[in-house]
Image (cartoon, rainbow, N blue to C red; front, top):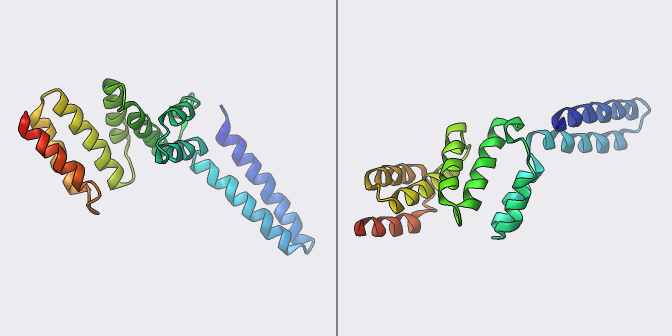
Length: 170
């Protein structure tokens, strides 16, 4: 509940211990303790559960990713970018089974703001697929053109071609 506050207090305690070590001439240990403090401060800005969910998605283990995401009880208390990625990951996990819930999560993630253009492109590609499955061709084509603009590294070319082929059947 007070996760960020506890980590901030812990980092201040570690910083004071590091200053104590520096003042006693233990420079090597002081630097080591500063590195530990850096990890604690980093964990304030990067939620480890979200990183673990990304890991499980890379391994294509949707059940474990979903279980990790369900452990986050109050996503609104996360930093905004983490909240966006929480919604994005939930959308990816649910896109396999529950399309309506996945659409809500993708839209929420896009509204909050995903940092990466590729992540925004993947979210919009999934939304385009949902629009096509509901026979909303105009919305799907608009989303696909946005995906093409966002995909600067051409990582989604195969999916775009496949979606355009399916679009011709509608």
